[in-house]
Length: 194
Image (cartoon, rainbow, N blue to C red; front, side):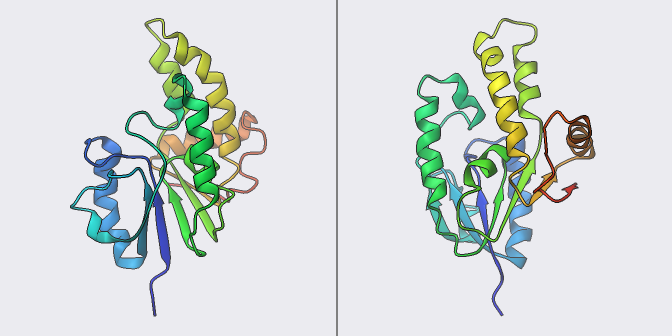
């Protein structure tokens, strides 16, 4: 009996230590015990320590630098998003599960052929942009925040499962669902899990 196929969809660069990369480095060996792992991410972003865990690899057309939300702040952002979306729509996942480490990436990948799409929510991106602009004038963040907020609200509807990394994040998502700020969130995502 073969293990089910699980693709990790991420734009993380595992050569740059962040809280997200550290958490994924701890999680992935455990997932490899139960799943056949596939990698969907930036070229060269997978560290030699993790590379043996992944049997299949799909490189996305992204360069080093900001994540998907940050592309709103870059002049070439819309072009980069269109290119990434086109690549994600053509993913040859073969019925495997896609585990996206960002709800925005999950939204972009929602049209790819798949059996299950799970999205990790490790923060509310629109709120992170609000905090980034507080205390100092950051015109780009203030302009991008409403667009990202609408995109993030729509993105919550796309996955089959939302996985919150903490009780606080799960509570924030539930509060937004209850307040109707995300219009219809939860219709397709099943339950929010921690």
